[in-house]
Image (cartoon, rainbow, N blue to C red; front, side):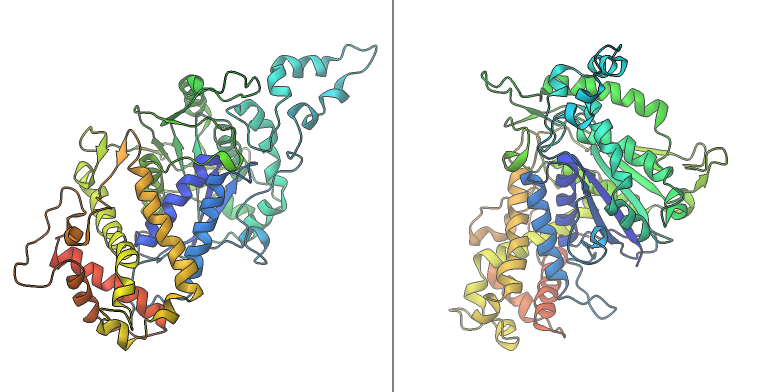
Length: 506
């Protein structure tokens, strides 16, 4: 199985990785042109290890991986939930789970100490280096701590992040790289960590040292990247906060400057995606850490779909050569692809019918199947379980009873993904530019009216709502371990419901 290494830089990188994981849980496959799923290797570059957005993403991926470890995918299995494998151990040499590339000497250290500014001063001399550093960086920059990121200062990030190519994690990543593997990079263009990290990472990949194992394959590997333009603003800092360096009024000017640089200097990626919006949400002011917990956003979902799109592009369209002048990999002249994303209708509350046909067909069916699965687990499983007040045949025959519902697989891991998925949908619906394709709080009697803009088929004399859902489950016959049967039954039942019984999704 070929691997797709997905580098998530900064907070935006972590949030897009979360959206990607949600899509894969729902059955959106990240696969090549031949239909073979990639093994996803997430790698986060962010000095803010305590950021809530990062910790939420890591927990979700661990729960996903635990669920998938109990599932079997072969020709006999029809299940598409959790199709892609997620590898969380590459950076640790397959010893422990770790997706974060470490940065040295950033914890509890300010920038001037990091660059050795005090050591540049020498009594009786011109102090040229000291003067130059003082001219390049403001006093606020020099006094900035870096344990929660670079706070919208790419000039700081470009200095600090230049070290990651020498880290043990980077060396282990390179050593694990094989023929047929690909790389994708997620970054924002308007902050500090992402704006500085993307150009550095890309150049380090194409100019990777010949002394590092795997260097030749990485130099010519297909590389895609999404550059996320501004899509939110940050509330101003409190009046008494004199230290904050985050000012969203500078996001647009920083974006213009970065785009100008990208246009002239960024020629190492095979495919570059641009995603952004002109309707801005306002997030609480936070420089990082556990308080940096932003709502999920439609832009992050679309950025994740860029990864799906990149994975499917044929190899022959992504040819990269070694430049004989400097031994660095660069795409064939004229072959770099630039892509943007648009919706069909300009609206502040997006539903599936507002999306282009190709996007709608990619996500509507799997996302609807998974939301029905999650709602059933939240609202009906305890009635239909073996021993429940309305126990069903599928539950009796397979011993889906209290013991199963108290198992670590169900109670911790599957429940963790379910809760996060519904929370993710609710957060995306709570933005100025909302993605709100579902009415998640409808009563049981209106279960199949949850998809906005989709009129469910009438069934005057047959079973309705959860009774119809139960009927679809009772008709399923699967084999394998109990966890495999459970997931596959729900996949098959929800597929029947959304393609034949109630809707005509494809």
